[in-house]
Length: 343
Ligand code: NAD
Ligand code: UD1
Image: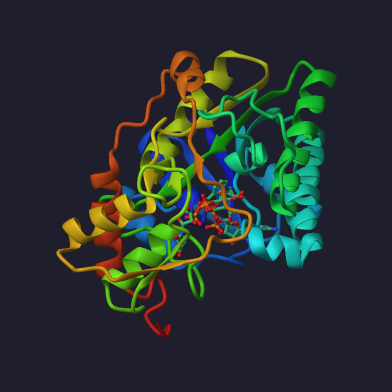
């Protein structure tokens, strides 16, 4: 049985990927500092899979913690999710982003090298494409720079990983650029619960539908799109998690540096998302038009063909599944993993 180290495995995408990996027969060690997650997720994962992953509470920037993990367990491959991801916060506090995302990845790679582990899957983001207008975005659509420190931190790690793979043929590295991950596990046991007011559309709309917030603020209705609102490539988190399994399979057969978009290849507008939530929840969801949010693009969607051709991976869950699963998670867990938390 192969053993995976999953950094950030208690988080939103990490927990869904952990489920897929355990169900595929991998053994997993989770490293997470719980800065944006709860240890309750591990109980939920045991309910879904019947397996308790090994959990280490610690920081990916801590070389001693990492060395201990690699000395205690025979790790075959690492999936590296641990990091911080709020675009606005990255503008206010860039050091936090360069420390957790860039320095954390650097320490991880150093220790992997020391411990002779050379297989790595890295969570990157469509944010690296900046304000490229090259729709749909292909892996080589990097004709503009990222527009915020979060995006820079992801692109810097991509560059570091590409250089590492060139320096030593033992490395086998998959970089996955996610588009807009949404939805939740079909069990309703795990999902995303952002702290405070959600920045992202899906959690915001579902909090309006469940009655935690009065209306959705639609940022801009004057974009050059079909209905004037922003268009994004939303991808179900379970499809995304399965993309990681396909990348692991690929790394077992290939050495080098590989890069794939993980998206569906089609976009939905803000109003289409609100409508889908209204249909699924049977709640009339109020919304108001506000000015555009600074830094937002009119539209952003992927060309997913490279992952399809090389990994044999295709997103299969549609907008209705994304909304149905988000809604199930939201209604069963209105306060996320924390029953004490105030709305
Ligand atoms: P998340 O915040 O739910 O998960 C990240 C996890 O990492 C959390 O459990 C957090 O506690 C942990 N963590 C943060 N810093 C750490 C550190 N220094 N040491 C150890 N643990 C740490 O976020 P997510 O949505 O699951 O995102 C996972 C990864 O995917 C991130 O790297 C993120 O940048 C990337 N990504 C996310 C999205 C998205 O929309 N969710 C899109 C593109 C890329
Ligand atoms: C944002 C991040 C991106 C990150 C992604 C994670 C920015 C500029 N980009 O992408 O780096 O990878 O989240 O999913 O922050 N919207 C509303 N009302 C809301 C929230 C959003 O109208 O309350 C609109 C936005 O204007 C946009 C769409 O909904 O058109 C999607 O927004 P969001 O979910 O925040 O994702 P992105 O901005 O695409």
